Amino acid sequence: MTLLQQAERNTDTHADPDVHTALGFLAHLSGDPLTATLEYQAALRADPQDSIAAGDLAILDARAGDAKSAVALLGEVSEKDPGETAASMDLAMIECAIGNPQAATMALRHLLEFSPDDQKARRMLASIESKANTCGH
Image (cartoon, rainbow, N blue to C red; front, side, top):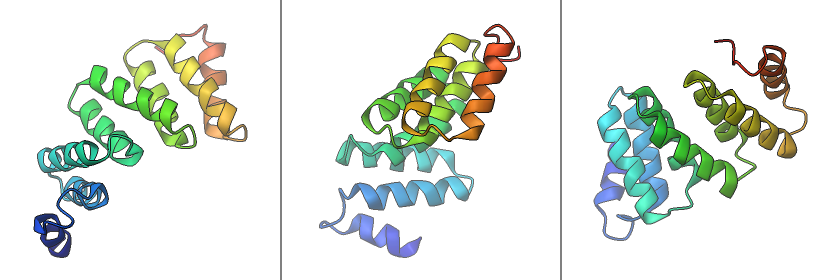
């Protein structure tokens, strides 16, 4: 982590989104969500298309109780980078958790368009649909 922090202070890499994303990840693993959030936000300022930083920030937001922000970030990632299927799955899970089975179904169908063999997504979609779109609530 020390080398990454030195790279962050270096004027050549100060705005490098990969450095900020890596620092955010390490801060998150170290149990420091505030620093992780700040690093992911810095990564997104440097590269608004950074789907990894946006997805990780969304998870932190969701854990902090800010589902609205998490849904917005994950929705953007899912649309901008459909190959980032974890974002669609996370979006579906959050939508279910906040009682929005229709949005969860849409996220899962979007995921399955790009990853039709994703068995976890298929099982979750089947579960939602078998319970009349209630997400198990």
